[in-house]
Image 1 (cartoon, rainbow, N blue to C red):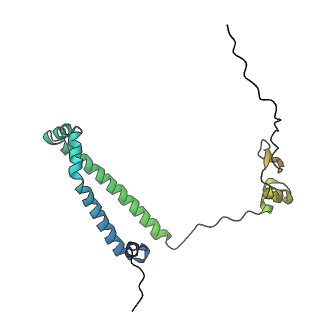
Image 2 (cartoon, rainbow, N blue to C red):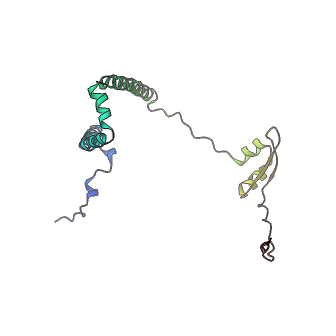
Image 3 (cartoon, rainbow, N blue to C red):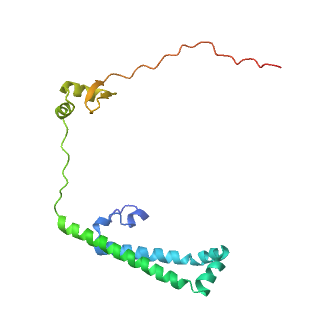
Length: 176
């Protein structure tokens, strides 16, 4: 007889969607969206009751009795049409770039900057740059044109010491 691992709910859930085919992922996503929409539909009576309580009659009068929903339908249709066109353009552009640059990665890593490069850039000796790397604190002075004039790579100045003395007492209240 085989020893099976203990069964738990997490073992029943597919945790590696990259092992699924595109069709399986699309089916799973479609069912998920469908059932989330159904879940939202189940809340409709509660939302309707809340709408009636919150001045729902006003909305009913203007949207149903005065037929205001017709203008809303036209507006919603134009919004959906605009979003569809923009989404199509976006997907088309993405596909164009995917087909154009497929298999070709133009991104190159930046070259490593050495101490020699930094010394040449700032026009200072290389041992100074090595000392800067080891310092915990640098104070750099620049000229008007951005050239480095001076660098202090020392430790920060010591905080002033406070000599404890007598605690000042408040002045006695003045009586008039």
